Amino acid sequence: MEIGQTTLAVMDTARLENAAELALTAFCWWRADIPKEVCEAYWRDVHGIMFARAPGLWQCRQLRLSGNRPDLWPAVEGVEFEVSEAAQPQGMGHALFLSEANLTAFGNNPLPKEVIPNDAYNFIGRIGALLSAPNSSRTLVDRISDRVIQGPPPAPTFVLCFVSGAGTTSTNAFHSYLTEHVARPWSGHPGVMRLRVEPLPSYNHSVMSSPRVPHQWPSKDTYLGWIELAVRNEGVVGELLACLAADELAEQVAAIHAYPVREIYTIVSAGRPTEVGLRGYPAVQTIIAAGASNQRSEAVLTILFGDAVRGLDQLRQ
Image (tube, rainbow, N blue to C red; front, top):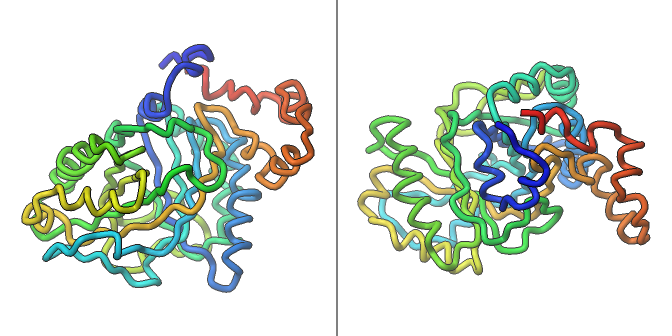
């Protein structure tokens, strides 16, 4: 795939994300013996910036999650909206790769192959990472069009996680239902600002292996897909569910868990490390507060970080 700098400048967020063939989702639970704030800061400013220095990534984001919100939904017989506290992930890593070759380049690099997995134990108590099937993930709408969000999202945003129901005949059938009968109709609602659907394979083991970090899912109900949903206001979420056929929903879906996204940190965008990916968030905020615009110039960043600034490995496709 040939994507040049001029093309990148005019592509919207949805088109940029949909250029990627593969998506990786990592559900994360923090270590219980370390304060949550320390785990989250370490994830972003120590662990995260290593991803910005590895080849192959097209996009890399960290989503900080709040606790499940069952109150957002109208009651639907046969669909559960509650989930135990222990089973609720506190963070989600989301990465996109343009091609299998990019994923291979990423996986063979010493950082993702050895350093990053060995570092996970410093803040992660449990991890479950899944690689979606090629070209199965789509950003169906993005009216926010900010591909480098750093901090609280500009609109109420949720990660909606789906547990398949008793009527699901196969993983592919569930993915078709989630994409065509849930995500696509929802994307046309005027109150939806952003919607991305991520079908997931059945969870057997984490595709990202981290020594000393358990990979077993904390409950029997694993997720077979999730939707990233940004809305004008929280009331839109309930409206969306009310638009679905309740009997079909209850047949296909056993549970929906809604995790509010408190903050998003973009480490890599369109194959290029962001300033946060290069320096860490506190340094970038300090530079902005000081008005030190020279520190944000490409010339200075290139001297400091070399080819990582231009993302040459990722753009030469």
